[in-house]
Image 1 (cartoon, rainbow, N blue to C red):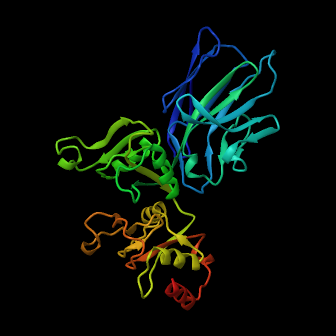
Image 2 (image 1 turned 135 degrees about the vertical axis):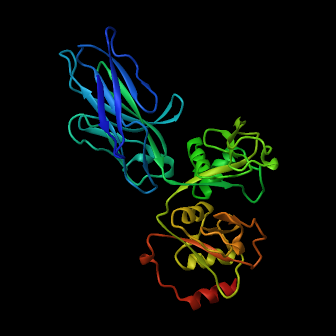
Image 3 (image 1 turned 90 degrees about the vertical axis):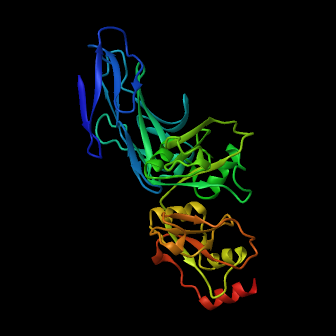
Length: 377
């Protein structure tokens, strides 16, 4: 028999269920688009789980439902107790507990506490609601429904809208092992990119000639315009893969991923240019913080911030975002321009600040007080 249902995006998909002539419930297999479940014809007490094929998409700070429904016909020997368990697939055959419920009892785990709940929209609904979605929530989730005798599982992929940004620190290119790269992305308001994320960025035209770590421990880089200095001109376009590298000993750049902002990035300058310390103080006096690299990329990609003025950002680099390219603003392509890491004592630039919340909540600051403070530094 075929079970049809409609996704929230309007895509109609089928879950194929093969009725086996013998044997009990056989383990499920998922292809990413449909799920085949083998059950014994006529046997009661089995559990059948259906999850959405493809993926569900949200953004950081949003609320999302991971769809999961089950069908259960209790046998005379079984009880009515059903356990619903959600886990996150962190690596092949490795899982992190997210949420478990049985009857009226339920528990969320780790960073999911206070943010996850069952939707419980009628009989057989095991869908999970995740509130205030974080960057770390990205990934695959398993919905498992169990009674005393049988169980079945389904997979839901949670994707985030956002932007990839290549990153290297002040130490220079190819200076980070895998753990350094993880830390660097987190410090700049991101996480290491997945292959799916960097592949999607490549499809949109991303072209970067330096190899970087991804979240699975592989090292890759996207090339849209083949050239001699980037693996030879005749080499095909695509996401080029160095494979899985030694996480401790080998060093590369990083490809980080970030999502939308709960706030605003803006440029601030004074009559006299600022050094790095002065730039940090300028933002703090306005109730803000100096913008992180990931925040500047998110503002460029999502909020369409376009500013042809170089400014300090959190890691001590000088950058500026360009949505509409023009000759005097660094070339023909849109992007976040990077002028490198100057001496932090140089008074040559303005600053990009980040303030949480909407602009209506910003405090009114005495500009003369700000200028007097900066002049004293």
